Image 1 (cartoon, one colour):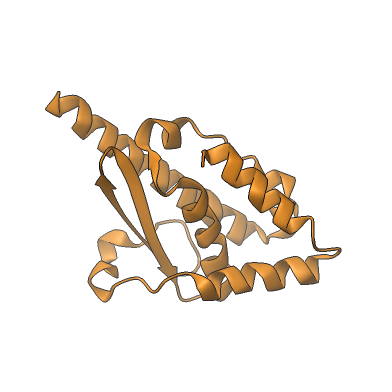
Image 2 (cartoon, helix red, strand yellow):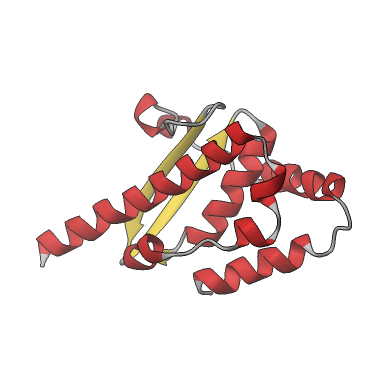
Length: 143
């Protein structure tokens, strides 16, 4: 699936809920379903700067695509990062770098998250795009 197809799927999922209580429960459920990050990746260098909660993000490339794994100690944040990894993991680095993640606005996250959580979400996205940039640079060097 493309980045936009996955985003549209998330938007449809959020449309099933009438209120933000249900949407928050859904985000929490997504966090609970996020696979546990291997302890070897829970290092200081994988902690995202700019998040109030501790968030680890590990990225690797395989066959021209970038894959993300993440974890957090805060369950809502874990749900947020699970949505980002769902949208961006398994995509080409260049597609990640130019992606417009409109689902954040469309589902109303921008208006319903505390400022610190919004900043953290932006920091997570920035780090994912930075990883994609690094993988793109490595690919350009190897050509």
